[in-house]
Image (cartoon, rainbow, N blue to C red; front, side):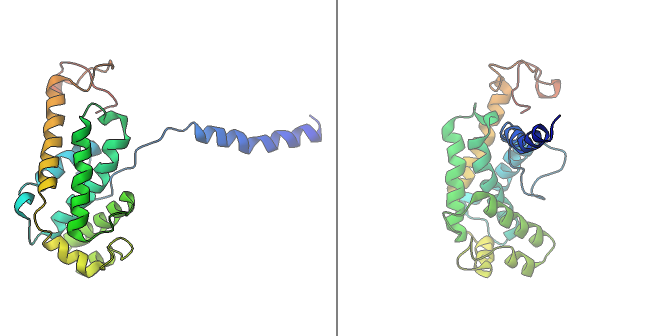
Length: 211
C-alpha cells in the first residue's frame, strides 16, 4: 500500500464510524434512579407505582412531599416514554395522552416551568424524592432549581407538601393501569408478533417488544 492510499484509508475511518453511529437504535431513556423497585421492567413498574401512588389525589394528598415528588417524576418520564416507544402503541392514544395532561396538571400544581424539558424535570424531581426519603430537606430544595421551578426550591417543596387536588393524575394513572391489565388479559399486545406470553402472564398469546 502506498503512503497516499494508506492516508486515504485513515481519513475514511471517521466517516465509517459516523455511519455506524447513525445505525444505532434509538434506545429509550431509563427511568431516573431510585423511583422504581429493582429487577422489574421499568415501564410496567412505573405504571403500577404511579397508579398506586396517585390514589386519593383527586381530593388532594397533603403532608407527603416525597410521595408527590416521586409521582411527579414518574409522570415526567412516562409522558415521554408512552409517546415515543413502539412497545406502547397498542394502548389507546387517548390513554397515553392522558398521562401528558396529568404531567401538565402536576407542573401547574408545583409551580414548575410549563415548557421545561421532561428529562430534566424528571431527574430534578427524582433527586428531590431521594433527598426527602432520607430526611434531607436542604438537599431536596437544592435539587429543585429556579430554572425549572421559577419561584425557587423552597416554594416548590411547599407545593410538594400540599399540591391541591390532582383529578387528572388520579384518573389518567388508573386508566393507564386498567388498559395495560386488559391488554395483558386479552393478549392485545401481540397481534403481529410471535413471542409466546410466558406462563406467569397467562400463556395465551403473543407479546411484542418484551413488554
